Length: 231
Image (cartoon, rainbow, N blue to C red; front, side):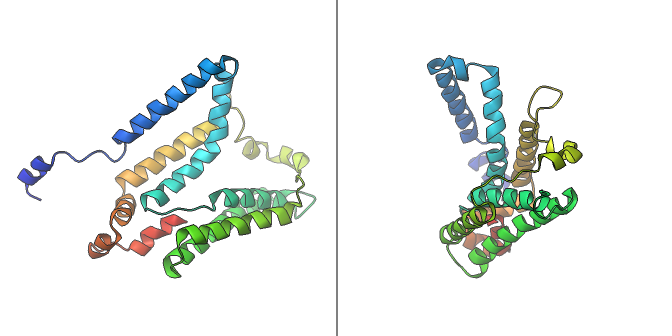
């Protein structure tokens, strides 16, 4: 593009922080302060804010991955049931009353399970051309069924064994600085996700595929590869 054309079009908006994100943050802040006015005993305390940030951090980490899916103009309804299924499988593998695997083996198997579920979603959508809504909704119900079958509605305990792996299992607890580690982990994941989406080739190709898949194909982008972000 000629310099004059770039000047006439104006400067491209930044991808890392756009205009609507600031408005959303302002809206969330106003919503929280409104809650503090209505119920100051709860929302007006720092403990409540800390608990809110802690409890939403897990969902926030999932939302970072979902951002790539949404930028790709698609949807994945199975993330919640996948999260629950992986947690239940971890408990079944790790608990002494079940398979009693060591921590490293358990984490690796759970990570593989999550990747397999994502791969199934990707194959259904990109290869078999199943609409993402139908494919991921099906995986959602399958995941919920497995959770119920594996737990029978009962809790799985491994508190005694957890004492031997205190460092790993305390990653979700409050640290020496007084705030929960989940908040810090979410902040790191969110920053990394934003940088990958805004500043890397994969991020550009994801935006291009979501904006106009046919044009992205003509530009030489492997749109099926970008569509794997649906997983």
